[in-house]
Image 1 (cartoon, rainbow, N blue to C red):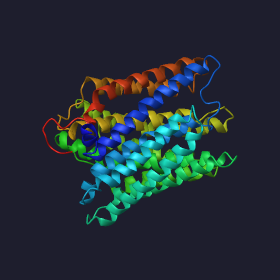
Image 2 (cartoon, rainbow, N blue to C red):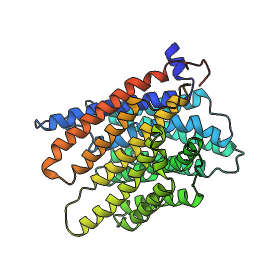
Image 3 (cartoon, rainbow, N blue to C red):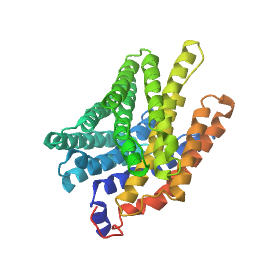
Image 4 (cartoon, helix red, strand yellow):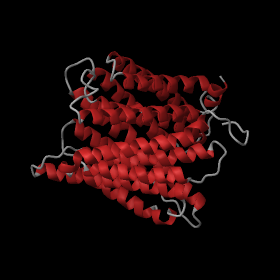
Length: 396
């Protein structure tokens, strides 16, 4: 009971703990699946199609988001945090859904349980965040409003996942995937980066002038949503991707990442952000290759964004929040720093696997093996912080 009481002290404890468990379990599951496929077997023969994509998009990223937003968001807005009961129900229900999706690989009926629980939990989270935004007296609610809109699109995507299980039409699942990535996950990441990365940097780097105009984040989010809409309509997305690549590349330059390389926590954030632009460039290249008749899966750009940008930024942000909110020094230790570079190896291996077909299987195995090692060791070091009391005796 004492451990549960400690977890319930702050939203980030429950969100990060459940997210880390689902992340590590999901990686172990996928590693087992890839190894079995090498022997002509599979764990997925009787489960809904594309379960891997659903778990990796909806399983753990939203849990980490809820832990962060319910902890930091009320401070942005100048309002009281939501009650423990309310955020606990939202995070707990969503975590139950994610765990059920993992169970669905053995018992397909759990797919319905998981998808429904995620839909209900995320709907509760949307209502909680709407209440915080509406109650805020803050004059600047741009970031909070954009996150709210993205959360609502995430609920729409989860609805599409549910519909995909009740019809033989594969279009619902495709729409759900596009909506989850381009409607919610990527926009929320970009909004949080726009608000927090320059802020963190200015607090550490002497003479640093944060650059984060409102038009920039609005352009990022609008571009993400437009890409998703075009993709779902089966229309070319490369013009939007090219503009986003230019905007993100220009931001990398304006944020002056080279000034942060001696501060590991900051360097991890800035270097992870570089992958957002690389992912967009790969999208444009894949579009050009497809128009020439070259077979392109689209998975290189997807994993550049999901692994290189989102997973790397997750490692950087969650490490920082875990240290700061547990009363520890904001210094990335050897495990976090080495884990970050291990994750870069994972990303490069997974991207190259799409362009080197003869080496695809070895590269995939290197990627999943390193991913299991990176997040397993990271979890061993940081997850206990979520059920332990703060060393300084303070709340949170």
